[in-house]
Image (cartoon, rainbow, N blue to C red; front, side, top):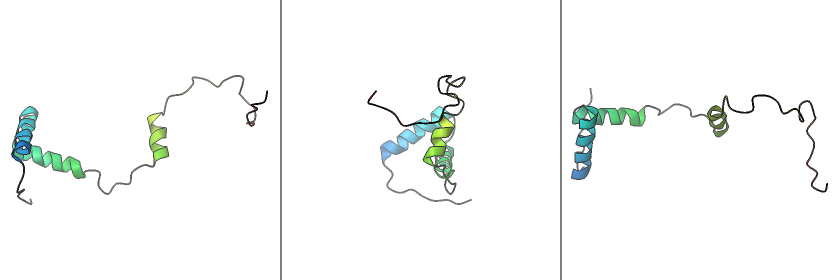
Length: 82
């Protein structure tokens, strides 16, 4: 396994990391390892496009049935003069 040293880390950051480790029941080193793993876990994966993400968010939603007044009718432009 690799090792590296982080120099010039602010004391308040170190203290917050220690508190976070205590909350999660881990050591400071384990906590930092987990943070680093999470930071790079999605690197290199292709991200879904905006349309795909929107579609996934609303999948399963919508109307329970077709609107009867529109069922089977062809699309037509709006008429704002009527």
